[in-house]
Image 1 (spheres, one colour):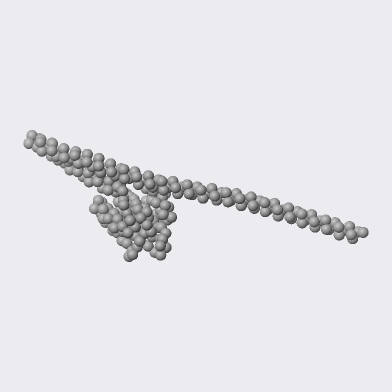
Image 2 (spheres, rainbow, N blue to C red; image 1 turned 45 degrees about the horizontal axis):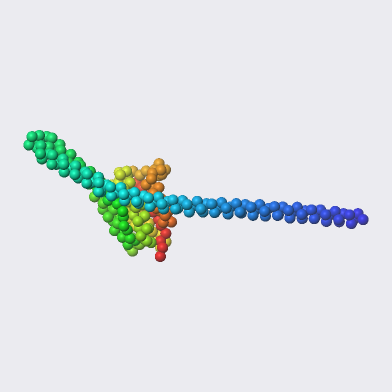
Amino acid sequence: MATRSGAHSSLAHQARIIDVTVQARDELEQRVAERTRQLLNTNKELERAMVDRQQLERELLEISEREKRRIGEDLHDMVCQELAATALFLKSTAKEIAADNAAAAATLEESAKTVNRNVGLARELARGLQAVELTASGLKNALRNLAAQACDSSGIKCHFKAARGVRVPDDTSALHLYRIAQEAVTNAVKHSEAKNILVTLDRNPTHTCVSVLDDGKGFAVRRRAKGLGLHMMRYRANALGGELKIERRRTGGMDITCIIPSRG
């Protein structure tokens, strides 16, 4: 009887252990399932947020292009014409008073020259802001012209170099890459105190990249991170599924490179 009682107690104990184990397993599976649902919901929210952000970035780029076009047209059609008219008026007045007041006439002539110089600056600004109609095959020439214009307007030696046979995926990619290079060159001319700027267009089997390198004083990326120009360059790189790298060069100056996936 004692043996039977002991066996019965042992079986009951084993049954309780099994029940506890099954209960613990069920609870664990329930927690795992609940946590999995939470993670899936979080992942869906993140995906929606990423899609919304990409849409906002695209809209911001479109607004930027429209505003650049509008400001460029206003500079060219209104400001430049007004300045040119002012210069002509100063010259005309100088001629009228030259016989009676040579000193004042000379001052007006010098003022007219200053106004004309400002006309040239305004036209350069307008040219940089006006709409750019680019095709994928035209990017190389556009970048070459960008480097030449930087040389002419600043006196800095700006060179362009392209790999043989390099191509970009499409017209949209060409426009974004050009705008990134344009912004980087403009910043280098204005702020870097560089003597040389190099614009490059390169490609390997998987990626296409545009780089702008200078030998100037460089800048701290964190301090410039709030600048709208850098944000716009990053938005353009993101719109192409690419990446914008901003690095200090060991030899001095900066290296700004946009890398995008090649297609086809």
